[in-house]
Amino acid sequence: MKKQANDCLPNSTTEPTWFKAYRQQALQASATLAQPIFERIDYHRWPLALQQFDQATSSLEDTAISPDLYQDNTFVWTNKHTQWCQLAPKWQAQGVIMCDWHTALTKYADLIQKYYGKTVKWDENQLTAQHAAWMQGGLFIYVPRNVQVTEPLVSYLVQNARTTADFVPHVLLVAAENSSLTYLENLQTIGSKEATANIIVEVVARPGSHVNFASSDRLGQNTTAYLNRRATVERDARIDWSMGMMNDGNTVGDFDSDLVGNGAHAEVKIVAMTSAKQVQGIDSRVTNKAPNTIGHILQHGVILGKSQLIFNGIGHILHGAKGADAQQESRVLMLSKQGRGDANPILLIDDNDVTAGHAASVGRIDEEQMYYLMSRGLSKELAERLVIRGFLGPVLNKIPDKHTLTTLEKVCEQKLIEGQKNA
Image 1 (cartoon, rainbow, N blue to C red):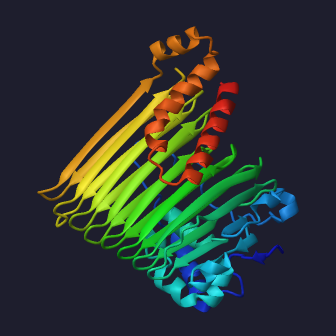
Image 2 (image 1 turned 90 degrees about the vertical axis):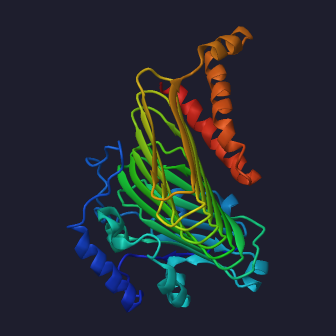
């Protein structure tokens, strides 16, 4: 198969006039807008301001991307360049769209204008405005009405940190009425230069649709990242989030699901691991805006070394959302006495006749479990890994897609082994 490549530069002369105006408006406002506030996540001194560094060439040879990624239903993007984009002919025949941002603005401008920036608005805060102004490109997926995509659509968003450059991709995923798909997103870093990542994903689940969104995040140790994923879920639609936060650098995860239609449903499952001296703050919110909506959050995390992991779980039932259900569970396991963990449950209830609940815990590894395993001849490192697998199991075992589950298990194991070596 032949490699396909496109350049997507900020403020490109090929962009439509309305999009250039959108960028300019966001750029002007970014200087005055405030940064977002997340409970107990102290990130404001981090270097998250985009510097518009533009040195990364991101060629396929520079980033050494495996040729094994050249498959159907796969998208590969490095900084400003689309390295590969191939959708199987049978899905193209049914009207499914999977393309880079440059193609989307050129061929599908009507869809972009209708959905882009509606779920994550550029003027929400300084970080969303900077993203809108300096977004480098990314991915657009559209599944037409009544189409069931039975094969996963996979993306690899690869940061080239061999040279100094910001990393600012945008993903827009739209599932039309009564459609369904599984999307697996992989975030990776090649190289070790200090860099800033500002990544936004917008998901629109139209009435009756089902989106299974899974991600495996492994950005580099010297990458400071703001990662915003948000869904608008309409009547009787559903989104299943399955996210593995295995980044090695300081990261803010800003994850929201807005349940705007009667019967909308969101299931949020997150596993996270921190090591060395990094900080990961994960703010997961489900807002029940309509009656009979369901929002569940399940977060389990592991702390190694001197790192910090903060879980905020926020369930908000608005006035008028009668019959809504908001549940959350956040648990943190600490393998180090020098680490810091925080599980912060927040329930905001603005109406009656609803169901809501939460559970949260931060604790150290069970010494009795360790003693039992080591008494059977296992090393301390292997015993720790077995205990951690059991701890993460309740989240991983609820991931419906086997390919996603296998991917996350491998990433968890790799991160854990590396964290033990560096402890």
